[in-house]
Image 1: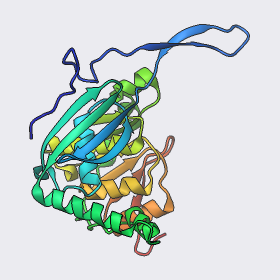
Image 2 (image 1 turned 90 degrees about the horizontal axis):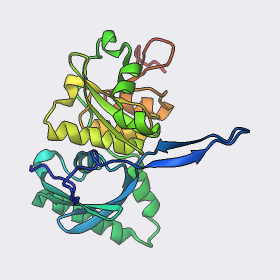
Image 3 (image 1 turned 60 degrees about the horizontal axis):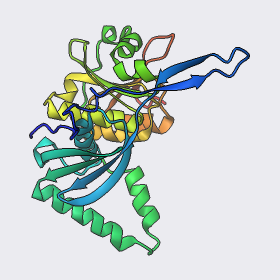
Image 4 (image 1 turned 180 degrees about the horizontal axis):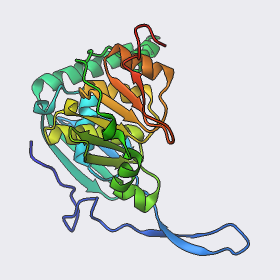
Length: 279
């Protein structure tokens, strides 16, 4: 699949363009003034084979990775071979992504859109929403847990890898730690779902095997992140924030290793369960 580039007058990617600093004044007696670089946010319109599908608010970095990951984690494609091309263009403050996908994937997408239209006004839209919130997912082949030493100092290491967050202090991150314990990929976004989608897309586009390492998210570990990880065949998900009970139940059900990395204690493995029937 050709690597797309953002369409800008200078030919720079969104990652490379200079960021404006915004003036502020501190609300105290001194009233000191300063400037800060803030996180960028823009609207991204995604179309598949010419048909508009979604508009998302994203950080304008690694956009092609996001589009690829969003397509896979949303069940729109089965893999990278279904994505023929991604063309990203800029129009003022907005971005648009035109995605060319296989005939099989496009037919499935049109069927899904037709089903949505057919349920409109008939009282079944709530059922459709529940199916999206609690989808049927394939069960993963169980993966071994990562060595404990690969989790040591991970909070500090991911902090060092978050280049954009160091500038703005307002971005989530998702990273891939490879089989040797090194952070191989790191993607950042204003949205925690978007950050994981970008990482999934990067894994796809670089043809890295997700089960030969683990994914790390800096955000709250909610059920939607479990859905994305399972669809991307990620064997182990590590979160800096504690998971919800439903997240643990789904991780165990689908053989996804789920590990919480607390601030001041040892890593906690919630999935697989520590013993048969454990709660």
